Amino acid sequence: MEDNNFNWKSSVWFHVMIDRFCNPDGFSKELRKEYKKHLASTEDYPAEFAGGKISGITINLDYIAELGADVLYLSPFFKNDDAGTNYHGYHAVDFREVDPRFGTIQDLEKLIEKAHEKGLKVVMDFVPNHCSTKHPFFKDAKEKKDKRDWFYFKEDQEKYPDINFKDKKYLTYLGVDALAKINLDNSSARDYMIETAKFWLDKGIDGLRLDHVIGPSDTFWKKFNNEIKKYETEHDRDIFLVGEACVDKSFADNKNTILVGDRNFRKQLIEKYEKDPIEAQQDLQLHYEEMFDGIIDFAFLKLLRGYLQDESDEEKFERKLESHFEKYDNSYLPLLLVENHDTNQIAAGHENWEYVHKKAVQIMFEQDFPVMVYYASLLGKKQEIPDIRSVAYGDSHSRPVCPDELDQKNDRYSLYQKLISGKKS
Image (cartoon, rainbow, N blue to C red; front, side, top):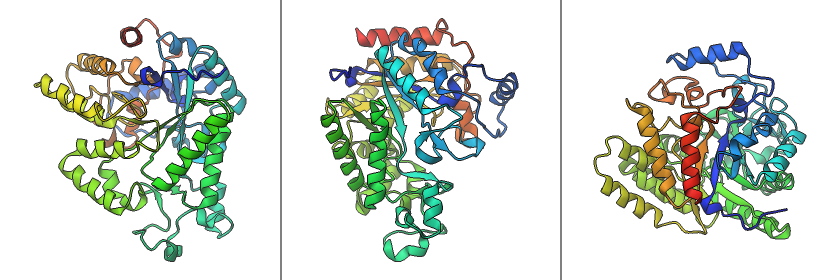
């Protein structure tokens, strides 16, 4: 039975990276040994699939539900190319299949069914902007077959007079050659991706965390939103769309692959970022107010990081938060976080890192908006390097492998459980 009275504004999201959360048969001892060695050093490490399964989440739903979370947010589970480093799920070769390294569609359907029984909504990470260059669609396009116009090729420059391909033969996701940018202003590519979203909604998915929303055009997102809301009405569902939008150095460096707004909007955003990164992030987030139900609140995270550097002016920080949040209402929600799979730990670089983490999450839970709890935050493992982007594969420091037996009695779990209970009361 669909719960159309679910309160997304007070919701608590539990963010799981499938590959790192649970292998029902246990993660290998050799893998654990290698990870332990890596996480205690600053050396490069060629991260690989660890072996986490969708079924591993299903058998640990009590761990999530008893924490107090009411939304389960899954990392991408599309079938990916065969590169072992793509354990995160963002290199799709089939948008309508589950990667066999994670399990099967049947495993996913069982997870959704069991999650719903426990009162949990299930949100998937949906990635329409790009795919692996090993995707059959891109292979077709390279051979100048039916899918040619689904992608942007420098050889077809006359079709895209406003695009600077630089030294690339085709447009990519932020300069990553292995990820080809999809032309979602092409009607057949757009319709395919919208129908793909509906395909997963038909499986019981309750919401979509929309990856890299700055990549596709506003025209695409408006059409996407309209079609999903139409689906919502036709099926008497309550579907939540939340965007992920960031303005940072990679935005400026790869502006030729980014289609948010128009050229003037992007130019002004980059100029503002150079002067005031937080204000630029705030402007970007508000840009999507008419396109999504919510936006991941990286502006809040930036404000929080700034305050935690020395906690010198609490009143000034509170005024900044008030000014930031007054721009949102029940129709467009900021989804708050203190860390996720792409960020440094909130307490990275702080000597009293446990105190800083606790302070950060307390501030987050004091706000009257939905919050995201990252699975790794409950493990209490200290990030040993100052910046996960300072070394190759440093992101494995923010994506640790969980213990085979998840601990519901450690201090972190108890802290979050108490804060969630307070938020819900």
